[in-house]
Length: 97
Image (cartoon, rainbow, N blue to C red; front, side, top):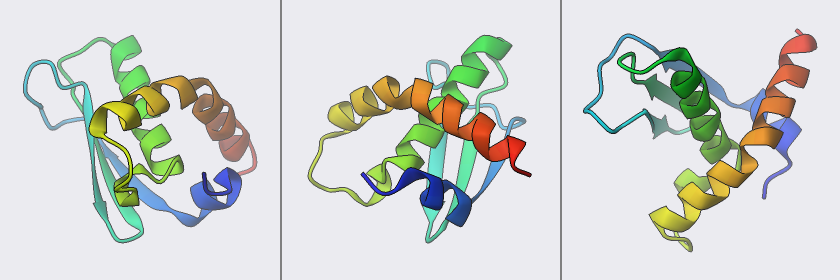
């Protein structure tokens, strides 16, 4: 795993909350170099949208978009397990603004 604090501070992302995604898709991320577009499905309740955001942020922190050694299922399981840490880092990062 890449050093998380440095990675979060070094990456830019934009969150789109107004782009409906297909049913069953809570969120998705599209990488473009060091910029990430995070799409959160507005069709779901706030709690699911928040979970989806931290799931997608976990993928970014863990470097999943550039790791070809793991399956999509392995990456998703790893991102799910990392959500509590992603939440903690996000709060810490935002409190430093």
